[in-house]
Length: 141
Image (cartoon, rainbow, N blue to C red; front, side, top):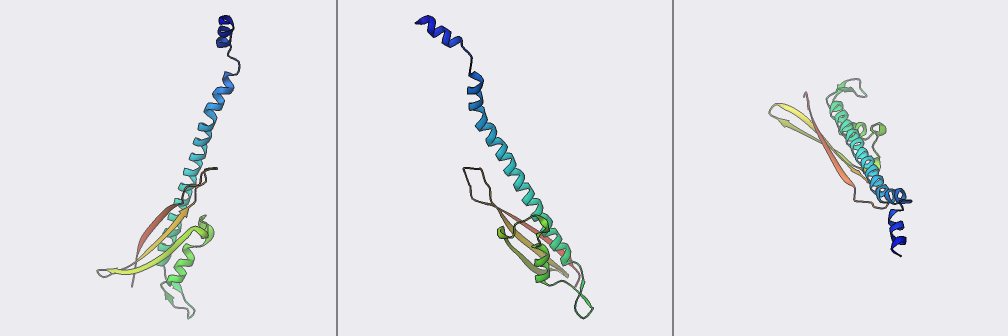
């Protein structure tokens, strides 16, 4: 019986399958986690780009129906920010909000928008992470 036990302990067939079974879930979880972090970075970049474009657009003077140039309305700025070319899903966007104010003799426009990024770890669905971006643009009166 001792000889039989010794031969079983020396037998290494199947050890690679056991090692794979132990390492594969950890490796798969790391790959999925890295992809979710990539999705977060992509959403942050899209959000930042959308808010920057809205702030830049707020500083321009666009022609109105009478042919005169004027600063864009808040609705025009919101339409610019929420356009789909920034890679954001409109179902997860909160805002944007446009705030106009003055600092001394200078007028500014604050564009703020939030975006809820849903994460998906196959069997686990954590609450969405909310990203917020604000950009201030100074405009001429």
